[in-house]
Figure 1 (cartoon, chains in turn brown, yellow, cyan, purple):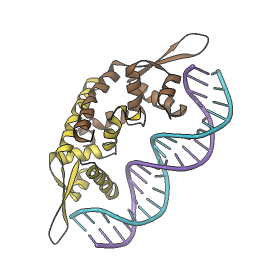
Figure 2: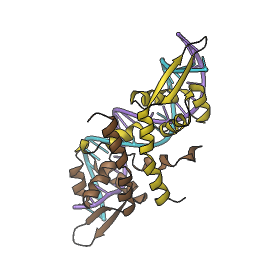
Figure 3: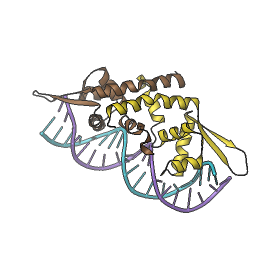
Figure 4: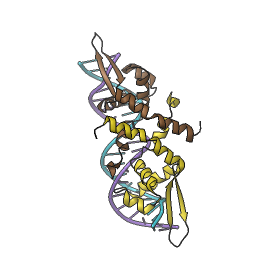
Length: 101
Length: 101
DNA sequence: CTGTATCCGATCTGATACTG
DNA sequence: CAGTATCAGATCGGATACAG
């Protein structure tokens, strides 16, 4: 009965307080850690790190290290992550239709 | 920046551990409290009550009392709730396409 | 039958300091 | 620059007992 619908699993993937925002930022453009920290005003490094790792573990984003004297890491959406973001569009539309504007 | 997208608000409405299941059950047919408790094996009365109240507060389900010697209450989806459930369909499809079957 | 009141443990988030 | 470690506070879900 629990597994009758698969929604829970997917909703869990985006249930973190900052996850959707992260997906959104990464959808606009690939981002470095510090960039994300600045753009998601208020998030702590620990939480940012944790949520990125979860998104990564779920295959929604990827983490790429670039060689150099200083660490340079870039996060970006996977195709899967992009597709999930698109699957969320009807929810936004529902929101516009059923919640105030 | 937080309010740039409305996803968080809506996802919050279905983020409770049993919310989607509840919407699903109510979508199949209007249900009484005891019925829901039996069908959602494992949920406690307190949590069932709380989540129903949240769904109600968000306009996703309604609670109707029927007069009689004993209390008879029936919960059912609103149009808004039904529409939200439909807006979640693409997520299930994403799940089928991107997660194992 | 349909809930509410309490208490508890687990989980989540945040602040801060420290590291390679 | 890109994180990890630690600790504290808040929130969530669950068990149980009780009430209208």
